Image (cartoon, rainbow over all chains, first blue to last red):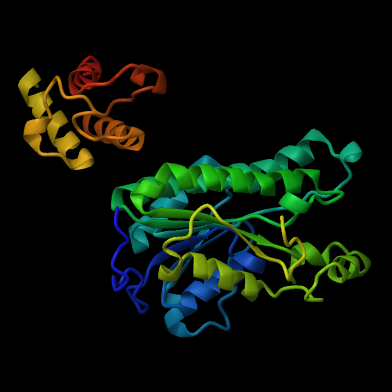
Length: 258
Length: 79
């Protein structure tokens, strides 16, 4: 198969931009991704479990391109319904960002089965559910982009996060296997592995732990959620057409070499 | 529906999903050798057939299905 013409207007910005679905898009990295795609002119379905994404400071045209969708990724029926809703409003999903995730941190000796299951079910199985639902239309269209949100702890490990790290490492195996399955259909599947990012998820760790982590980062600071969104947007862009199965660390050098 | 009509419906699914000319969709045609279909093509075809004929095909039933004729018989038996 030859490389596609680079001039193909696959992602022309503007009102008829791509249809992007981001899970867990009401805050943190997911919200930053949703906003990045909106700024690029895409139509964005932003799924949330708790409260919908804030829109107060968005320009009116971007509000029109944003579809907040309630969806608990642990519930297959809700995933299905969310995609039905998005397809009815915007058409088929061309870019999927599987970002929804939770933490239930504690040392393994104190980690009960529920804490393990909850994190795996949301972070890894949730990704499986949304990717599986998104994939059929992508395969039929012979085009699509999937970006999975992993974490450097999937490779580095993190005391107190056995469940979270296992789920995040699982994203890599999922992505790379799927990249092999659907590469022939023009669909790319990639992973973004953030390090320390200024989000609520990091804030709960406490200042001392955050400072300790920060001291391990060559760039000496945490990332903004927008810096992670930039990497996601790149992997979804035409410029990344030949990139699949890769793990793009956005970690200030924290895990370099892994 | 007559067998002929069912086969025509089956054939149009195969033509659309596998993107092959209709005259290649014959009972003896082998998916891999004659129709250049890979495993993902077959999954797509099965999903299209499930939708078209409103049936369900289990993974296990697909074992050993290598020709158009075998696939058609599997579908026809469910109607």
